[in-house]
Amino acid sequence: MSVKMTERAAQEFKNVCGTKSLPVEDTMLRIDSERNEGEKKLTLSLRLDSRGPGAEDAIETTEGARLVIDKGLEDALGEAYLDYRDDGGGFVLERAQ
Image 1: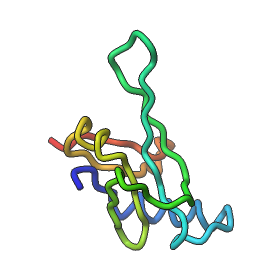
Image 2 (image 1 turned 90 degrees about the horizontal axis):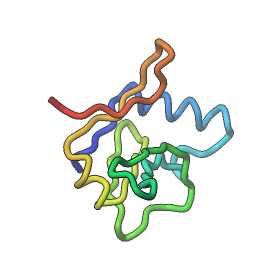
Image 3 (image 1 turned 45 degrees about the horizontal axis):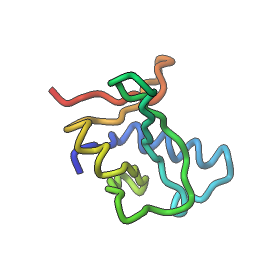
Image 4 (image 1 turned 120 degrees about the horizontal axis):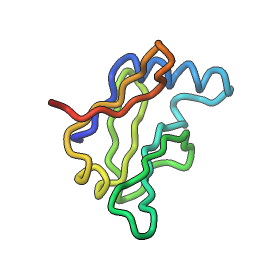
């Protein structure tokens, strides 16, 4: 998978699951996208998902935390990293350099 999750992001995902009493093994972090009509840019969102991955999903596992993204969106993003910033930035998706 070309979109990776850092260990810091995986740990924060586990913290969020614990706060919400969600089992980490049954919950995933999903990157979704929405294209606004008439615009070329995508709006990305991040959400907790307990439905399980679909046939068109790519899965990245880091420290037991699963990141799921549609394969088409993964191709559009290219190589990137989902990180977590403690300085108030929260989860951040950054393209690899």
